[in-house]
Image (cartoon, rainbow, N blue to C red; front, side):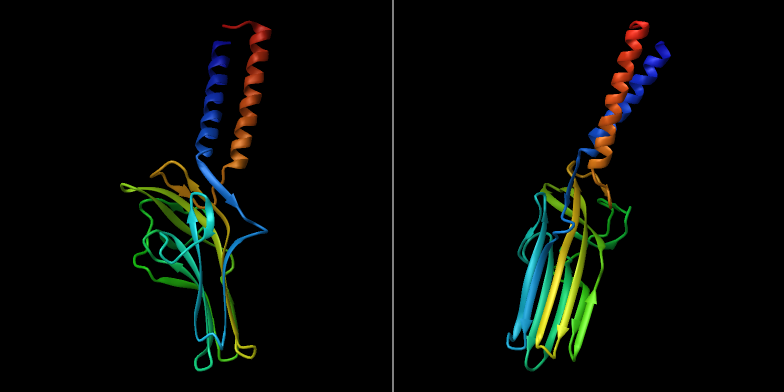
Length: 222
């Protein structure tokens, strides 16, 4: 019985530890209603139209080019140069380039530098052009000051349409999902979410506690 008791308590401690670790991941699921930055221009616009998203501890939000982490949608139109559209990642030292499911985002990741970004979707005249990135993953880090960061990942996509016959350009960049490790300076694997693992851990913990109590009642505590 002593050996069974020790095994039971060891399993319980492991399950509860897993639940605690998973609880440090903060997750936002926008699937079906993504957060988007949208830009639209026509040949009469004569300039770039811009829209931005930023990734924060409160989720994906409308932002500015000056924000620490921003994704941009850009549309341009003029009677002279035609129309073009692009969905861009910012390289301002807080975003990685596109990465894969399961990759780790941490201090060793490749962080961009500078304010200009790189297109994940681009389209331009002379006639009609359409480009979509599909769902992609990017890593980000939220600066908490003093050299401390929260590391996270986001599932994003970009769409660019340049339609010269209709004199319009449209760009979209959106976020389907994002998550970050709420423990500063600890990394996170792309795709990690807290809910299923936490719920399962808590359920298993409850079953273990119930089993232990039944064994103790049947055989007496040792």
